[in-house]
Length: 520
Figure 1 (cartoon, rainbow, N blue to C red):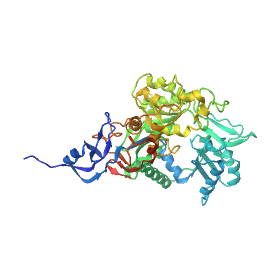
Figure 2 (figure 1 turned 45 degrees about the horizontal axis):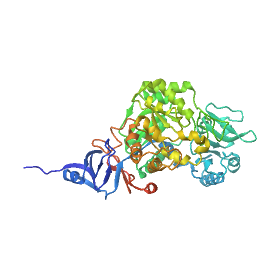
Figure 3 (figure 1 turned 90 degrees about the horizontal axis):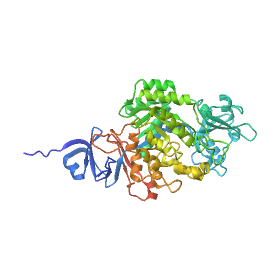
Figure 4 (figure 1 turned 180 degrees about the vertical axis):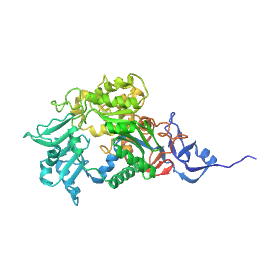
C-alpha cells in the first residue's frame, strides 16, 4: 500500500506571489517552515499535497519577499533618540527648532536638553545657526542639538565651557566655527562635535532596554528582519546579546565594533562571533565628515565654500593601526567615506592590506562622491560599496551646489559602483534617514535627477536582502527564500516589483516574520 501521509511542519504559507531572490531570481506560490527554517518551496499544489501544519496562512495573492536587511544604520542610536531627544527632522527654520525644543522641554527636569535632525539646507536662510537664542531661552540647561547627519552640533555656551573650546581652539579632525564677532558660534564639526557628545550622561539600563524595544518595534513594522549597526561599544553589544538570549530582542543584528583598542581587543580575541541573531566581525572607522555640513573631504574645494575642502578625521597612523588589527583578526574594515578625497584616501589605505583580488569584503560605507579615476579601485581590491539610496534623494536640492556640475557626476553613482564587483549593499543610515526600507527601494529605482545611476528593481531588492546579508558573510543563512535558510520574510500590500514608481512609497507592510514567527 502507498502511504499518503503528509510531513508535519510548523507553518505553511500559500496562495502567495513569492520572490525567492535565489540565484535564478525564481518565483513561487507557497512554502513550508519547520524549526524556523524553510523546508520546501514550490506551487500551492506541491506544498499543500505533501505538508500539513498546525498553522496555515493564506496570503490572498499578496507579495512576499525575503525579510529586508538594513545594510547600514544606527539601531541603538535610533532607540536612544526616541527615548530622550527632541525630534527636529523636517523643521523649516531655526525658530521652529527652538519651538520644538521648548515643547520637548516641558516637564523635563533634566539639566540636559537634547535634540536631533535639524538641517539648515531646508531653511530659507541656509546658514548654520548660532547659539545666542539657545543660551537666552534655556539659560539653566545644557543644550546640544545634532544636525541630521550626526557630524555637526549646535552647543550652548555652558557646554563649550565644560569641554574647554574657545575661539583659539584647534581640534584635529574637527572644527569650531566662529561667528562674525570672532567668537564660537556653538557649531562644532566632526571630532569637535564628538567632544560635546562625549559628556552627555549615558542612559540607565532600563532606558537602554526601552530604547532597544522601541527600535525593534519600529523596524518590524517596516519589514526589517535584520540590521547592521554601524559602530557599537562593548556594553551595547553585551546588552543586545543578553536580550537576544532571553528572547526579548528578536531582531537580527550585525554589530560593527568601535575602533578603540579596548573594544577591538575585547572582541578580536574571540575571533569572528556568529550567533543565531548576533554577528560581530567588523570594525567601523571614519575617513571624513558629511557633505551637508561640509565636513566631507573633497579633492578640490567646495563649489559653494571655496575656503574649505572638508576634513580627514584621523591620522594615517590610526588607519594603519586599525586596518592591521582587523586584517590579522579576520575582521572586516568598514569605513565611512563621503567626499572623493575621503574615498580616495581609504581606497589607498585598504590597498596596503588587500593587495589585489580577495574575499575579505572590506567595505566603504556611503561611497557618496567618487572621482572617476577611482571607481576601478573597488574592483581591483574587491572593496564593497555600502550605499544609502535615500541620501541621494534627500541631498538632491543642494548637492550640486556643494560639488558643482562636473563633480556631481561622480556622486551617488550606484550603477557604476555596482558594476565594479557585481554587487553592493544598501541601507538607510537611520536615524539620519527614515527607517523604511521601502523608501530605500523607491530612491534606488525612481530617482529623477542628479547622475543617471538608478538601480533596476531586481538589483535594488537584492541590495536590501541577499547582498545585504552577503555584506557580513551571512548569505548562506539569510537574505533569500531557499530551503535550509532562516525563515525571515515580509508580506507587502502591493508588489514592489511591478507597481508604478509613484505608488511604491504607499505600499504597506502587512506582516513581518523572523524564523517563521510573526513579529508584526
